[in-house]
Image 1 (tube, one colour):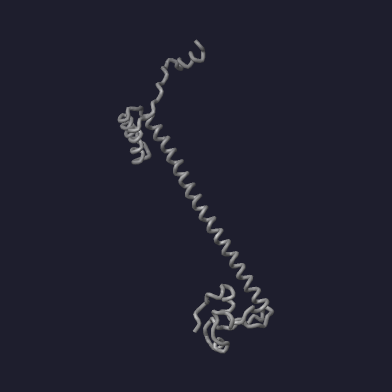
Image 2 (cartoon, one colour):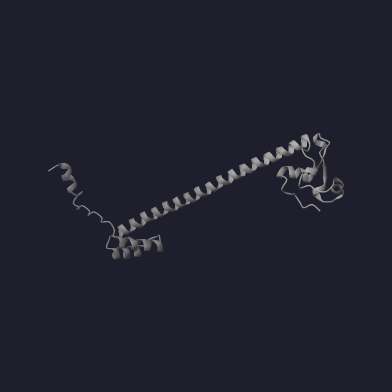
Length: 179
């Protein structure tokens, strides 16, 4: 007889070899899962009762519970990781949206700076959002008809606030209603 095989067939000392543990049947697993869902910590009396119902040693029930708690913890970590990944994706999408908005605002700021430096490119009469004569605008107390002096910017031209705003957002929208 081969010594390796002979060694496997003998037990250590005088103890017989332990019988191989059988896999739990589906109904046994269902009972353990139901018990675990009710209480994740196993008390001694409950362990003994479950072992009796299942026909397995109490130690096997305790080990199953320990493994199930570890699996439950890993599942919770994986679930949290997936939620964090989803949240990260949302943050990236918001970041891209904000970067586009910043780019658009920088473009609009550049348009205003160009308007301040080089003066208006069109008169108030050619803009559809500006109506009425300049005398009416000057006499009105509406903020849309206020005249701003841009002399500090190196240009002595006068700009109506609404014309400047119209230049920024386009001629289809008004900042405030005209009287």
